[in-house]
Image (spheres, rainbow, N blue to C red):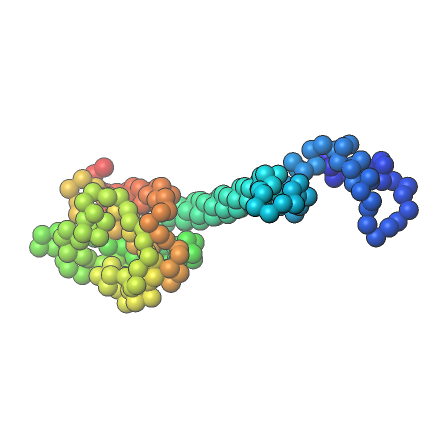
Length: 242
């Protein structure tokens, strides 16, 4: 781009500690888009005051300051958008890796192991558990590690009636959901599981020591995709109706 190259008028000049005003003026005339392409320089410009009287406002300086503030605000917004984009891409890659791991399960027991062990590293969390509501006079203790039976109605109590997921910062997780790991949880993602019509609802629960890992403002689409995949795998391995 022209603004990134040395002006022809500057070539051949004797080296000096600073460019003279005419050289700078010539360069800007030859490259009218220079300031547009380098907006970070705008806040540094200090237009000369056109009035020396007291209590007289120089509109040129006011406008320049406002333009500089607007450039800084836009730059901050752009940085925030880029950071959010990078975070979303990283989350997408994590969920895709987790999905591939789940699809590689050799049997139901191996699937549970992947969920409660391998997903911890793949999703960058500190604990992952599965919960299922007790059904009538069924068992109150699950036969597998990090799988918990919770009271009837507990899923709606944690998520809200019919809500698909809940992400939030907490000061410790629910012991019925996270078991011995509940005390270390500072943020959590709870995603509803409905593997089969008529079956009791359940939860995929992710817990993190990082209080900023999950929050109420985050989207839940990727985690819901993971839970829908898990529901299908449960139906396959347990031969449940869809």
